Length: 230
Image (cartoon, rainbow, N blue to C red; front, side):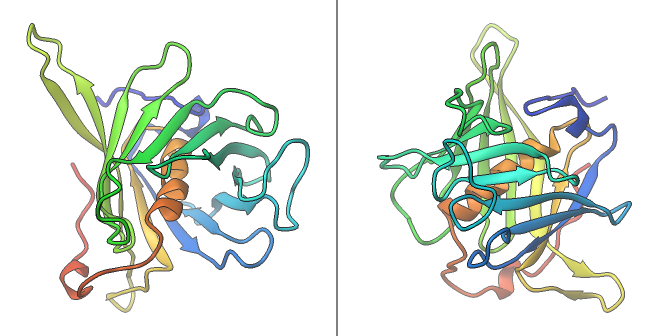
């Protein structure tokens, strides 16, 4: 049985593997960004609000802050870019914590400034909440909608070996009726059972900002859609 990993909240940890269909929308209009729907129920699970663009600005919210909202419009998570930052670092806060001056619960950064623009550079995510330990690495290319979130854990043996486990995956969306791969503005976020789906969505928001949508090379090699990890 998979170990429960709560970062944002217990309510976001499902007992079964979960698939979210994520629709990327333009960021030029207030309130637009991402919408995520539960594959099983078809209901809205999350959406994104962009602070400072005429949206739900208030308090100490800064222009460019991104708020992950639940289905009822409640703020679940806020991500904010840390400035200055050589490695394009973003911090994640519970609820409206960024506006309230609270400390972040996680921080994400590009592992190297080399390869900027390719979208293939690994992104590292560290947990910062009191008592929380853990590191996550994002392998693959988010612009190609082909990447995995890997939990890196210290081994329990005498040697400092590391154990890795895939806890979330972004992949291309396939139209089940037409059997064709959809455009990159619609994709799948697979979340492992007992893993925090809100935290996984927070990582997606950061990836969208760090790597963007620019792609080098041919997309054809990435059109094969992988099945969910077992």
